[in-house]
Image (cartoon, rainbow, N blue to C red):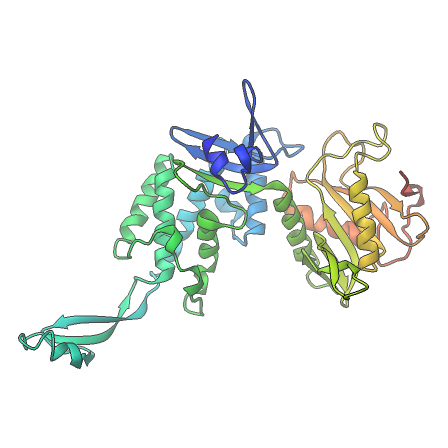
Length: 417
């Protein structure tokens, strides 16, 4: 629990990561790995339709790859022993293999300024040093020169990542690979993770191939979703908020699927305000939808993703959708002048309908404004974008937001308390 408490996502007592019961730990809405002395705790999401850990890991790695811009080939990943390696060891192996592949093309180097006292002139002479400190030793020349060196920020980051992973990996094959990489980076100065100068990395046409590895290293050292331990806790955590991961995975999948159309996808934006102060004119209460699909700059569809199970209509006419979520969607309809909205949930096997739209509701007194409730199946995450595109552009159950009415009227009901 000490590692969970020290994670940025942990909150007081680590309750946002793990809840400690009398005989077991219960994970909250996070996934990832916690590493402490002698123990590794892997937290996997519950993906309906997948009962085995190795299948869940495949889906989770696919989601992470899309969200984090990592090119993880299905063929290369297929060789992994998914059943016996946890998520952290899988990511370490992917990182080390990609790093080896890039190093075969040559380690990046750059000219850096150096000063040294040499027996022969190299570059230019440091006149001040030569005639003061070296005045009594004229056989040495104070030289200033540029030298092609591997000791650059990009390599320092890679070395730091290798060193970090060597401390936490418990897989013999991964440790062997990392030790080989550590030897390759022996000439590079060791820099503490907190002192790495990420903003000084320059990617140009000569080293653009390192962009993906830089993102990978950032994930392992200071990623957006990651929470590494701080303070004196002896451990490491690699954690992802499942709500955020699901949201961005859906948005990026849809963005990729709609390439080549006149529809644009934006995540966490645009940012409009719900109220204007009448006295000062100041904008109040910013709104930021999860996903907005626009056409010619006009919002056509607002999607709010929810990482939770919805209910079958026979069990609950409202399907477990919270009243607050409905109010939020109605606010989006007004603020963004948008008449198509969607609440999107992960699919699960207890639903009678297959993935896609399970219901469409008309906002009371707004005959053209519809809120759809939909699910998406994560068993095959690579097909999520295609399925969402089908829903938006003409699902047979009807939610084509290019028209004013849906085709299937029996799903349309008024939103009422």
